[in-house]
Image 1 (tube, rainbow, N blue to C red):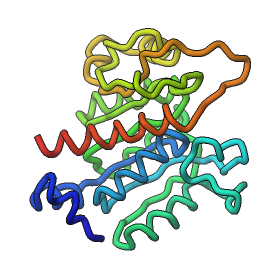
Image 2 (spheres, one colour; image 1 turned 135 degrees about the horizontal axis):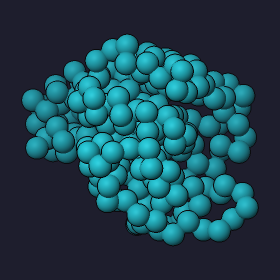
Image 3 (spheres, rainbow, N blue to C red; image 1 turned 45 degrees about the vertical axis):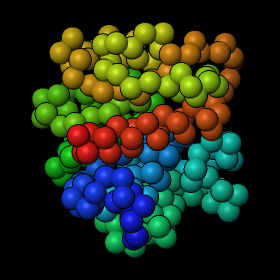
Image 4 (cartoon, one colour; image 1 turned 60 degrees about the vertical axis):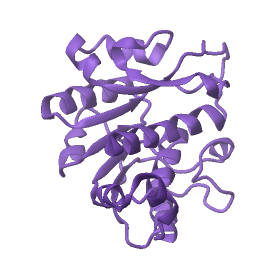
Amino acid sequence: MNLVRLEALIGKENIEKIKNMNILVIGLGGVGGYTVESLIRSGVEKITLVDGDIIEESNLNRQIIALNNNIHKYKTKEFYKRIKKINKNVIVTLINTVINKDNIDLLFMQNYDYIIDACDTSIVKSLLIKKCYEKNIKLISCMGTAKRIDATKVRITTLDNVVNDPLAKKVKSMLTKEEMSFTVVVHSTETPIKSEMLGSSAVVPGVAGLYITSYILNDIVK
């Protein structure tokens, strides 16, 4: 894969660091999908994808993997094919299952440089944070992106600094102060729009996913 344009920005040594990273992404929806896409296009060559869901027609408005010709197919398997079309050298591991408190140890079968949490279950998020804190694994966790439309209000901080986010509030209630301050999060400062349906657009989840990759790249370059 030709990374000459990125190399011009960050140098050959950092390109090699990116290629040698091992990253896990849990959740391949709007946020996770854009994270995976941008990580692969940034040169990551070892990645584990975790999701047990299939692609639904309602995903077409915001999920980069969703196309008219792959409805009802597994997100993990469709991403595997997409990744190989971008860079055939990428080693892709698939965990094609829904993660819960009983099987969360599946996420720690390898050593990872970064774990990216783009799932939408507060209990799984809190357990993941606890385990990454215990094991000192770098974690970037995404909070709520649904019911929001203003992508300019996406921010990166630590979990203890997040306010005005119902999902973050649930997660924080299950953690210690130390665990919250350890956890890097992407979140939106926008007040959630009141809606009976869990509405979502392409812009806020997409930008959140790109912010995650941006954080990793800048963490490496620094």
